[in-house]
Length: 245
Image (cartoon, rainbow, N blue to C red; front, side, top):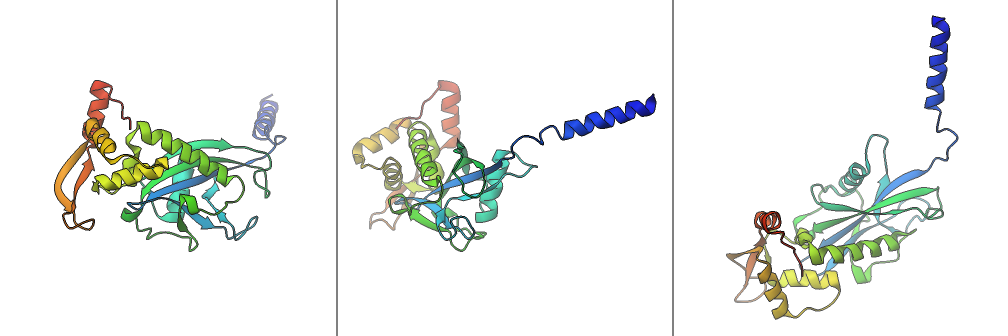
């Protein structure tokens, strides 16, 4: 009886392990839309694909999910492995599941977008020689549905930047008011009235004006500012403060 029970348990375990064998196997990937700002223009980091399908064409940075990681961990790994970057702002964007989106094999991709201050990150650990920054309006056509991913990321970035201080992730720690306005004009793709913009930013009361100046912009220089993260958090927690441009 004991032997019979052991055989039955072994058979049950085998059936459990093979439970999904008859189901379709689908690859799961992550693709990263990396936005950068160089004090003047919003840019996107692209790579020239070095394998088929679509070898030699421009692409987002991506990779496949491993069995030992979740999606967020996969996105962080892909970004770090290919660029050497870590500890940067990253947000999950959308799941792309069109049946024919990848001619190589049925693949579902989860897109993420990341925000980087280009000047502060020298990309010493970058692993791809073909990686290149493009201004958004000069970016080449991309493979598969990557153009759609970029458009979704731009739309999300615009909404977030209007209601949350994520734009400061694209700036160096110290920045001028002109650089901040350049950033929002790049994100929103429109010119902003200087006086109205400065008044709006000052009314938020989340910047610290320093005694230092950036002397590279003019003979008189321009005062530098820093984003007061602690003050912002306190205002949100205590007053229900809403960041709105």
